[in-house]
Image (cartoon, rainbow, N blue to C red):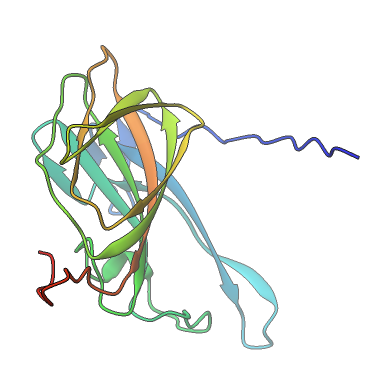
Length: 182
């Protein structure tokens, strides 16, 4: 018997201008973030429901670090706001969740992170380029598992592309001669 699954992906809210948690106006990537937690009796509660602006901006690219944990497994009773932790791509022994918006015509640099990345294209289309010249076109709804390879993201379309990523710390890639990949 074949099971059919239905999947619905909530659209990323792209509002201009939007009110940030700090109360100012911001043009660009704005993400509504709802955080749940526990009260003193361990009853489920909504801890935060606010719009977050981009936390990292580069030419043609905006990044909103939604949450980061400095340990895996995460401590779900830690009261700290995960968005206030490191914005580095790799958090030693940790993980992060980020939304990245690539403007039309944006092409990043070749890079490698010492992470296992899960990516979901939420809107638009983007090309994944690997260091051996292989290119893979990804569109809204496509997913990617990035395992520490050298790569670049290129938006060759005429509209912005939004990708949601979860980055988890990973063991270093080690070559046959014992050297670690950078």
